[in-house]
Length: 188
Image (cartoon, rainbow, N blue to C red; front, top):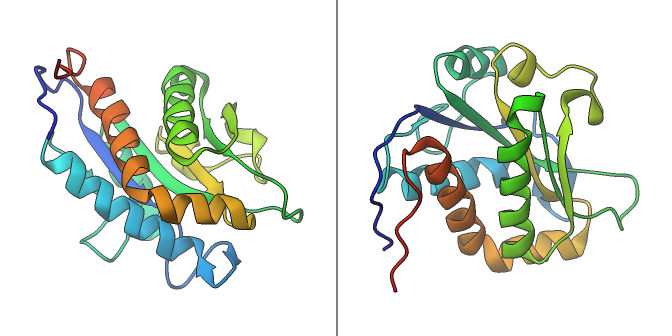
């Protein structure tokens, strides 16, 4: 386990996009909702050993979007996880959607995920860059959305499955650095 020589300065909220009622993207025998719910739970567990973190629902469940947006508003940093999808099976990579002030964090998250999974880094983008012009989690909740990988790309999905733990640790470390007063203390 890494040691952290830092004090938490910001509150953190992590959430999983979609639900059983709205599974999001479906491809290759997987649903976006199931993948990001598991990711959120594993990430919350990883973070809970290091910082104080809230999540949208108990392990294995998530809140409806309006409740998640309301909860996001009450935190300094709110991050929601999704999987991307495209008509082309070759579309690949990680990207974030957010307001401009979150671009540095979005770029750090994209780089960490791209490195952990060995996929393309599509970078931090504005809220309207996705398939919707406005996203409640961003416009109303003040949060940042992470599109972890393209569920419709078999190689992205396989890279995620094979490297899930590395991805969780990479995302967790970026978030800890963001909400704490000092950077991670790395063992020599």
